[in-house]
Amino acid sequence: MPSSSKPKAAFFDFACCEGCQLTVLQLEETLLDLLEHVDIVTWREVMTGESESYDVAFCEGSITRERDVERIKKIRETAGILVTLGSCAGIGCHNAVRNKWPVEELLQKVYGTEEVVSDAIPARPITAVVPVDYQVLGCPISLPEFVSVFKHVLTGRKYYPPNQPVCVECKLNDYLCVYEKGMICLGPVTRCGCNAICTSRGDACHGCRGLIENANLNAMVKVFTEMRKLHPIMDAVADRHRPTLEQIRRRFAVYNNWPELKLERGTTHGA
Ligand code: SF4
Ligand code: SF4
Ligand code: SF4
Image 1 (cartoon, rainbow, N blue to C red):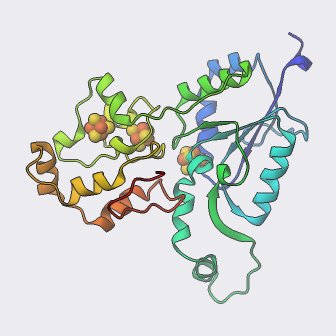
Image 2: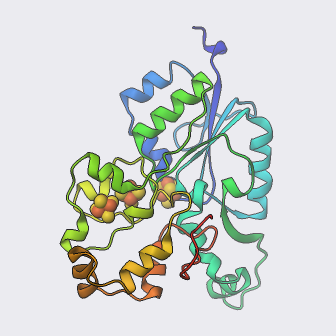
Image 3: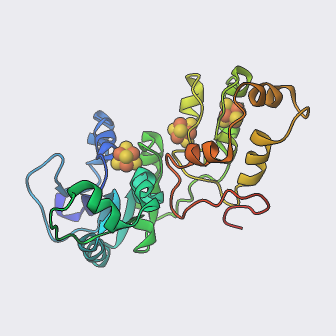
């Protein structure tokens, strides 16, 4: 196929660690296969050239400044297809932690009394600013999911991020539930698609792919803080840790800050 007949793809980054782009590079030989189907015209992390014209935009990071809003809108106008890469772009991730404080207070903390001109705004995911066509979640993204989304883009098929909890992948793989080790895991309310990579290595899920739809956070809070004698594993966790509501809120807030989570009991998130 002649090069000119391929769709043109561009990679862009906003506020983030750029780890998701780096993860794409780890595809190595698979990346060469993908490049047979697209021409990369802009990718600051790996090449010097750039183009104002592209068909597919892969966008990483969060929107944190007024100028970011203008930039992502321009990208949206140019690209026929916009794909977000990673949880900074999809759910705000670590960037949105700062939204607990007013921007002016943060600027004062960083710059002190120095006069500073800033267009900083509360951090938000790209998905909160422009419509997106595809999302690859995770911090960082899962490479098999990226390849799958890439194929969906090329073939014009819709992609729906999985909406089951990480526990499903844990069970399918027959992994030991970390609650059995007295650890607290956010897998029951976190969107799967990573093949439960953290729990496969004995760690807990920290919720990096965001919440499943209608996640019953309050049931989790209740289990951690109140329930006793329902299940020996839960009792063991409660005996060892017994987290406060604030500690649970902080656990969620590593990744899930947009919109601000309401952990009061009696409602379900997104309901
Ligand atoms: S989602 Fe995580 S790995 Fe990806 S850019 Fe954001 S902070 Fe980095
Ligand atoms: S380890 Fe976490 S994700 Fe896996 S089954 Fe237990 S609670 Fe669910
Ligand atoms: S197990 Fe949880 S924290 Fe780990 S990659 Fe999957 S969603 Fe993210």
